[in-house]
Amino acid sequence: MQLRHAAAAAAVVLSLSLFLLPSTTNAHNITRILAKYPEFSTFSHYLTLTQLAPEINRRETITVCAVDNAAMSDLLSKHLTIGAIKNVLSLHVLLDYFDSKKLHQITDGTALAATMFQATGSASGSAGFVNITDLKGGKVGFSPQDNGGHVDAATFVKPVEGIPYNISVIQISSILPSPEAEAPAPGPSQMNITALMTAHGCKVFAETLLANPAKQTFEDNVESGLTIFCPGDDAMKSFMPKYKNLTASGKQSLLEFHAIPIYQSLSGLKSSNGLMNTLATDGASKYDFTVQNDGTEVTIMTKIVTAKIINTLIDEQPVAIYELNKVLMPKELFKGAISPAPAPAPEADAPKSSKKKHRSPPAPAAPSDSPADAPDGDVADQTADSNGAVRFDGARFGALILSVWFVVLLL
Ligand SMILES: *[C@@H]1O[C@H](CO)[C@@H](O)[C@H](O)[C@H]1NC(C)=O
Ligand SMILES: *[C@@H]1O[C@H](CO)[C@@H](O)[C@H](O)[C@H]1NC(C)=O
Ligand SMILES: *[C@@H]1O[C@H](CO)[C@@H](O)[C@H](O)[C@H]1NC(C)=O
Ligand SMILES: *[C@@H]1O[C@H](CO)[C@@H](O)[C@H](O)[C@H]1NC(C)=O
Ligand SMILES: *[C@@H]1O[C@H](CO)[C@@H](O)[C@H](O)[C@H]1NC(C)=O
Image 1 (cartoon, rainbow, N blue to C red):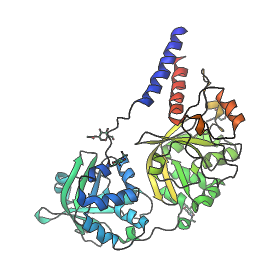
Image 2: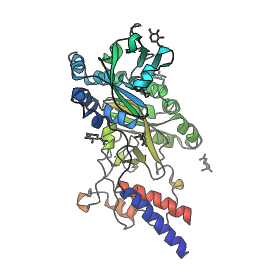
Image 3: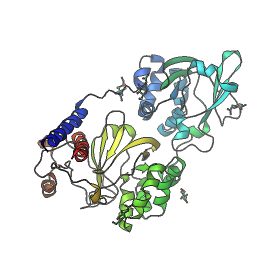
Image 4: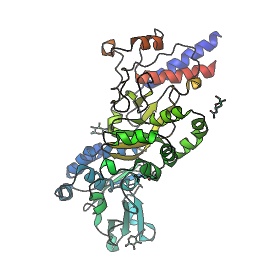
């Protein structure tokens, strides 16, 4: 018994210490790569401004087709909206690794590359694919596929930098012309969120939502800002037996638990750690979750599951939709699934949930463990939840969940 306790304590220490170690991920950083080349400073600036940079950093096996400052001023002289500039630049991120060698050895001399424009949101049909053609004389042409058969809208200039096979940065001669990418993005009221989810890997969630009153709650929030975390099809399919077991109001709350009534870009999520209210939050029913990130990955934690963002479906203010690898299970609906903890399990302190349903902004990031930052109110709740134990911030709370699991496994 003593041995078990020692092992359990060791597990707690071990998992806590994992959180204290510096992150050792050596993911690429497009801003840092381009910072060495002043001729790409405008391009780089706009990757940051349009929030494409964190999306590029998150992906592997990609090619960024950079253009110099002169080509960027041609684009900027069109006075497009920032949303349209984002679409145009996302057409310059190919979802495959092409370095100089691979470009000159394309099978049959031509290839079609999917782009970030095609992979996220608004592109229709074949728009968003780039035709790469090995031209005579060693030239390589790039052209959006919907460019009327012209193959050299832009040409390969030089390789810039590459980390095989994670990211290749190359220079092309000019901006790829695409009327569809340059068109102003449709207003939020024209946005069909279920169609977007259906087209990009969250079909089961979209269909479930369409058959539930929660659909209206989602739609009511589109104009004022909405971020949806939709579980991917595999995750949602395996969850369906549990979903069918819920009551009608449980089903609605579960679906509404997958969105927050505010627009959050990926970089916004990356810089916010802490509790957030959801569309299901309503007075006494907290239905909140914790957003947590380690600089590269963004995870969403409930007391029962930790899911991570694996894709961005769309990110156009005021709407963002991200795909999760798991269904978020709120403790309010799945109490039975929480393992009885041998040690007191303190709850992260939450600013009190707003009573206003569906309009309330999410709670700000959880305060650090300085008591001075403690939100007022909710005292009875806090005392009941925390069993007089120490205060925990998001990261340590995550570690604690892990630790509790360890302990449960060991006992
Ligand atoms: C490529 O990316 C993966 C995942 O981010 C990373 O583990 C690996 O070290 C990277 N490779 C190089 C050569 O940087
Ligand atoms: C990427 O590099 C830029 C410039 O060096 C830096 O400001 C930014 O914080 C870095 N981003 C990440 C996610 O490390
Ligand atoms: C690229 O465009 C050219 C000209 O329209 C066409 O002949 C070629 O088949 C296209 N390549 C691919 C892979 O579709
Ligand atoms: C939105 O798309 C769904 C398919 O996912 C469709 O059933 C619905 O009719 C569309 N709504 C509108 C307003 O077009
Ligand atoms: C459905 O609920 C019943 C009764 O609460 C339970 O025994 C069963 O395991 C549940 N099934 C699933 C798939 O959760």
